[in-house]
Image: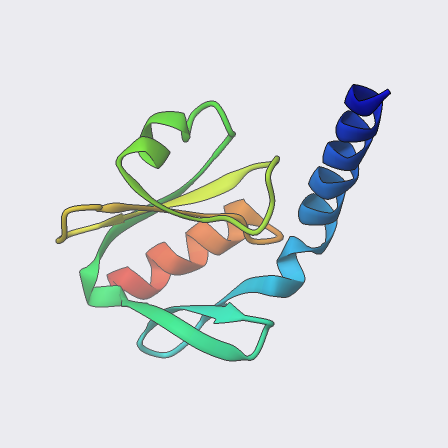
Length: 114
C-alpha cells in the first residue's frame, strides 16, 4: 500500500514540475545576454553574448553528455533543450528548456554573431 501511495505521489510531483516549472524558471534574451528569471520576473543570472561560443537545440539524449559537464537550468524534466556553449569557465555548457528550442538557439546565435 505504501509503495502505491509513494509512486502516485512521485507521478504527481513529476507532472507538476513538467507543466508548471516554466513559471518558476524562465529565460529572456536581453540586449546584452541571456537572462535567467525566477518566477518570470526576478533576474538571477545573465550570460553575456560575448561569452557564448554557440547555441544549439538538442533532444534529451543528445544533450545528455553536455548536461554532465555543465549547468542544468531546465524548467522541464522532459523535452528538447538548448545547449549554450560558453567560451570560458569550468562548466562551459548550460542546458535550458525554452518553449521553442530551435528558434531560441537561432536567436542566440544571431545575437552572438552581431
